[in-house]
Image (cartoon, rainbow, N blue to C red):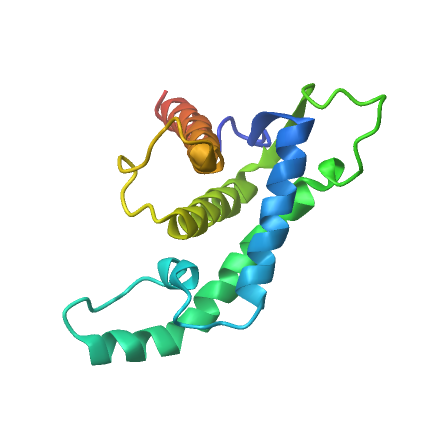
Length: 176
């Protein structure tokens, strides 16, 4: 990400309803449990999180996965914990005085954007795996089981666009 104006702290602001933040927090907790828990190579969700380096060589692919999957999953856990910390304000229980649809701004320092992108993408991969989605265009958009998958895609795309806008601002100010 570009550094924007010299001396100015570069941030990205995400506006999110309380209920969305709370549900994302729950998804992150489940995701952390998945990557911290027993790591079965037979779990398709974990397999989606650890790419196959050698698709034409099963032996080399298995060896590569054995040597790298723990490190990759540990990084995914650390990223998710950073995102979880950014969402701490959504951790409380809903009460009658709280409007669950009221938008709240989550302000991310530029360094926090990449962990968010990686975490949202990873959770989306897990959800896709659990729903049997192997391509983005191969699911029924009107089936309610896919709403979380689509919502994660929306949030991911929104964050990418915001990060790209900051990068473009940083590039243009650096060249002016």
